[in-house]
Image (cartoon, rainbow, N blue to C red):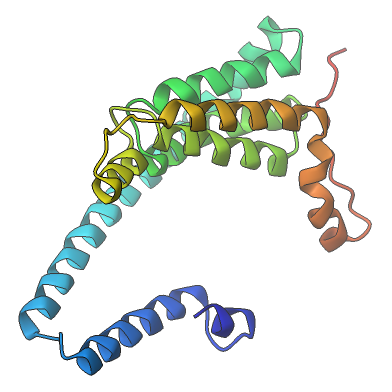
Length: 209
């Protein structure tokens, strides 16, 4: 699948279908294919797709509603008026995402919080690429934070250990790395600078007048 994607034989979505086909062929070759297993897998896929589709519809409606209400613009204006430093706004948003990670999985955090805070970060002068890197890292923290911590549950199932054993070490590592990128935010836009040619991406926050 990876070879096919990087050589342009098929898209990532088509690669998923090729992966399913390859799995079926392997199961048939190993003599483990049964129609019962096939229909069980299809049933689980339909359930997952239905859940994700409903969640996506709700997220699109939510994003459209807050866009029409001008709530992000109001939050941006209020935050910039109340806080002198753009970095203080960044750290407040980080705290909000960490708290949200206790209760929301990554898809919900992106769909509910990014439409609210993305305009705030852009108006504060932060580069969207830099903000995106931070959000991905905070989602990783959320995936390791109980009670909604899917990565911990998967690890516990595979390793047969305590759900929270050692998770604090990964929290510390991710948060230290996240703090470290504040020293060189432009490093995450180097590839974008190359792709954009003359359009240089600004990764430093604008100072308030």
